[in-house]
Image 1 (tube, rainbow, N blue to C red):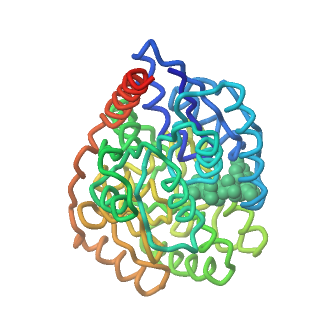
Image 2 (cartoon, rainbow, N blue to C red):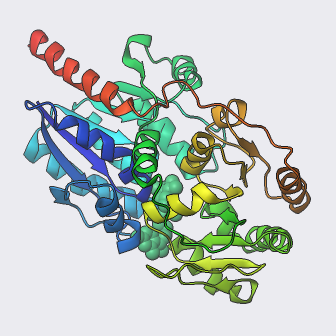
Length: 378
Ligand code: UD1
């Protein structure tokens, strides 16, 4: 059986790593890894392949940045050629980025079954590009791998038959557990301070709007007088900081290999960190502010308080069962919730079902059975 696995952007690499590793155990699977090139900077792409031991992609489409239509269109045109040439039996897509969307539409139109890993998550907020990507990808997929029961319910409400949905757990957590165990007892002191908070921000609704971005930074700067904040910024965020001339709101830090940084009582800005370095700093953080989807899940598993700087989430399980709260971008709400954490009045949370490091095992077993079934049908 020939399977094309698609990756394009940073969170995809974290999700595909355990699936690629597990597939190796099945000798009859011919896996082709396609990288669309949506993310291309070393620290957004290659560094993740190295940290997570992902094999070099078999095919790189080199698409790069562009508007949504330009980027998705270019991915589709290039991926169609690959599918026609390679004739895969299944295409596996992960997450909710433009590469997920583009490649799933192409495959479905060529009658190649699409397996969507992380299917069924819904925020209900269609102003976010990822929500459109999730809805459309699920509309054209044939196999649905979900991380929680709520995702199963969402899919059923949209008319997906129950026998196409597999509640397998969370591949991002497979990667987290493996990396956490690997670094345990061997802490990398990237930050000298005993206590600090971690901030990540890259959603267009937060950073592409000057007023919103400045408002959030004002709130976090207020907090940083009490607890220093480390802010590893995504390239899109860095670009906006330059465009809005916000440099003076931050202290620049460059974490060296063997030189831990000492954070000032301010918002300490760095470039994006590698997977392992980010895990080291996240594990030791007192709390995390984020607008990322994956970090809401990772903090739940690590038991670290998380304040999501958005008005919605597609990952409600991290709120209902984990350590996450959706606080929006209102300064007083951010400050109030941070104080609750600093005063020790935060929920402990539990680890959701099947977030146990074995999601990839379950996924690859289903893919293998799909092969057996389609052979029988032929
Ligand atoms: C994408 C995903 C988002 C995911 C995020 C993780 C979509 C719609 N969004 O958002 O869901 O959470 O990845 O990082 O697919 N850039 C660089 N170097 C890079 C990549 C991007 O400089 O390696 C800059 C470019 O200016 C680019 C901008 O970042 O235009 C945005 O990149 P893009 O891939 O379009 O979206 P992200 O914001 O990264």
